Image (cartoon, rainbow over all chains, first blue to last red; front, side, top):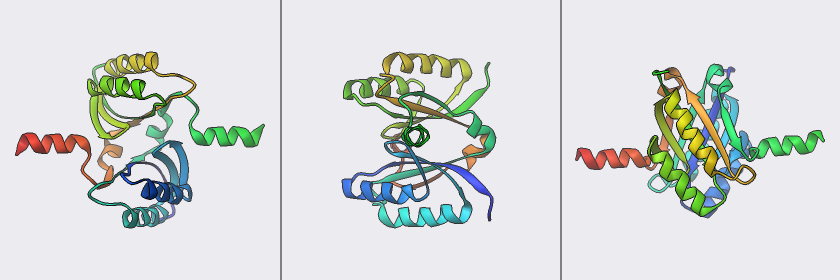
Length: 96
Length: 96
């Protein structure tokens, strides 16, 4: 399935080393917007690939990962207050 | 506007005291599913009330809060792996 989806990946990872590895994996699939929240815009097969990698790494008793899928309508309604999310900072650096 | 909306509130709060206060506020409006993620099912006026309280408390240069609104269709597609989110644990305790 080629059609891309907007997915919010949020997680609580109990172990520092696992946390670091999960973040590393996530960087291949999306942008970090908060410490443990990534925004991804990927097709279903890439999502499944990412999910499989994450599932292999986490401790299913200690860690928790939630995937929220947003349609275009929901995506347009996102609101943000405070410090600029990570990825916008990076984009700002490239543009200046 | 009486119609309820499903809102994911995710945040990075740089200061422990502010973090504790934000979580306290959020408990009045929704369920904590991850350490810094709440799920709320509230109408627009309650959402604005919550947002005003959060906005007064955060440091706009250090902290970051993102609100994701999910329609019913997106809400049904939520996927979760690993440890049960907080609120389900509480519900499980009440039910047993």
